[in-house]
Image 1 (cartoon, rainbow, N blue to C red):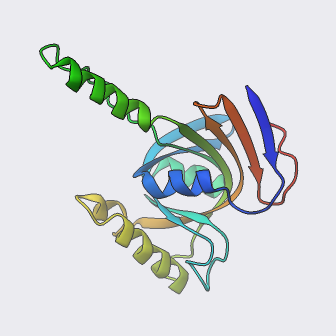
Image 2: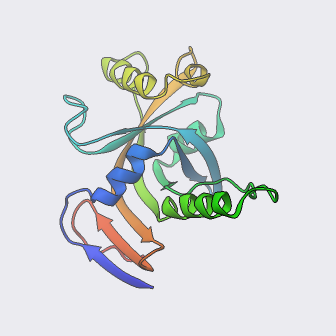
Length: 190
């Protein structure tokens, strides 16, 4: 698999596209070499959209104070995130469907299955009841206002977490290519 490093500090467009079009992100935390993974709703805020609190691209999450991820982040702020544009439907096509329907269904599935992005960052639990926390909570609510997601953002024990993105690996299946990005422009070893 080919690999290249993006030496610019600019956040790659493939990551922006993937984050802007995805509803869920996989969050990985760790405490004493015990990893923990969670599927999360999230808010992606492009550079400049979170002023005055953040000037760079960032991810906003929320979690309860009694959750394992809250405990892990409080102990170890280094996190990893996985987001992709794959369709995750395992449903097979209807055996009675026409061949045209089956062809179109498979083309549609293949069209969206291109990119996965692994991001590494530093998570900060925002100070409780601060203006910064309320600012990001409102942004997070506005992004995730459909269905029953409010219960995961609002509430006395719900905390807002901001993740500053430090590096990424962008895997493009079509091109059999891995692109690396680092916020500082350094070589990323993996």
